[in-house]
Picture 1 (cartoon, rainbow, N blue to C red):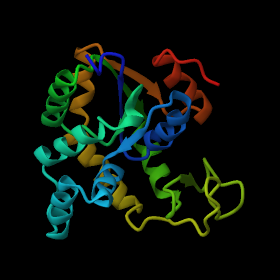
Picture 2: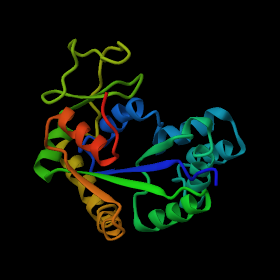
Picture 3: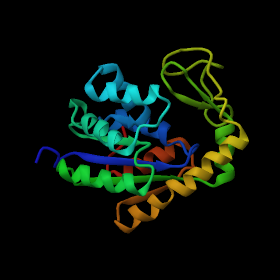
Length: 224
């Protein structure tokens, strides 16, 4: 089947765990696209496809994209040419119904190689990371005031844009609320994938390069 050689890499982790940063790093190492839900929706809107027009209409109304529409957008994204080796999913699934829908989608596409990578980190460390985050408004690269400073102050290492931004919702109170939502909605996925023997847990408190090495080892890919 067309998807038999593809690998579906699912990244799980609470806000602040570094999964977005690590997914972007692995994108070039693995030759597989990093697919975040936000980027995926924006791409479909930019393409002005029928799905994109539906998404645009839903978002314009102030509503959230429901699971069925999100699944169709994901199905379209996973058939694009850059996913020939596989893909890295970041931000989907967020709950058990989405996980089961994704499982059915992958099975229907003939994709049987699934690896779930979970970046674990204690809540106090997660809050500290969220409060100190800086992001590039142009390319989305994430930095931190203490743990991952840009090479040039307030300037993105990736695209050179300045200034970097501190998100308004990265306050301590908001961080705690976001982590609470993660615990309720997404944390059950950890046990779900563990029972399926698909989960590989990595300690996200380690040095970023060490985390990357462990992720590559879990995927049985030798780092460059």
